[in-house]
Length: 147
Image 1 (cartoon, one colour):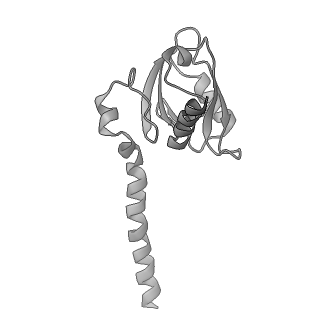
Image 2 (tube, rainbow, N blue to C red):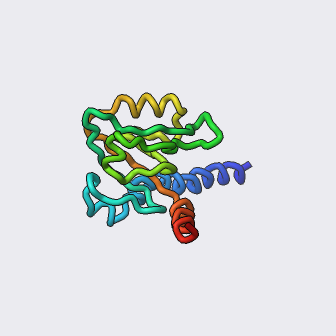
Image 3 (tube, one colour):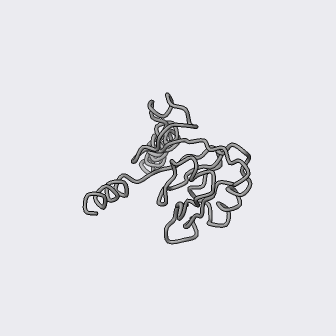
């Protein structure tokens, strides 16, 4: 009977380091390069979670999104960057980029509609944490070589 108690005590000890690692994920994603650079101008580095800041102006962000926790994609992905929008003028966001956070609001587990509401309610300056998949970036390079 004592063994199950010891195992129960050990289980939280095993899960605590995992919880700690999960809690560290946002700070780990802020690589020294990202911390040292200005979110208003820093590039999006493929394979790294990157924080950027975009001033919307009157045009709005000019993004369409697909996905959400309620879809097969499971994540919020930029579907299109509209030419007249602030994101296009800024030039850093691409179709295929994943939006992880908007002004500190985590979109990793939000539904499609919840994400749209968050994006619609953003102030003039929008702070986005985004992720660009390295594989997608490499595929784009391959297409450049073949075309």
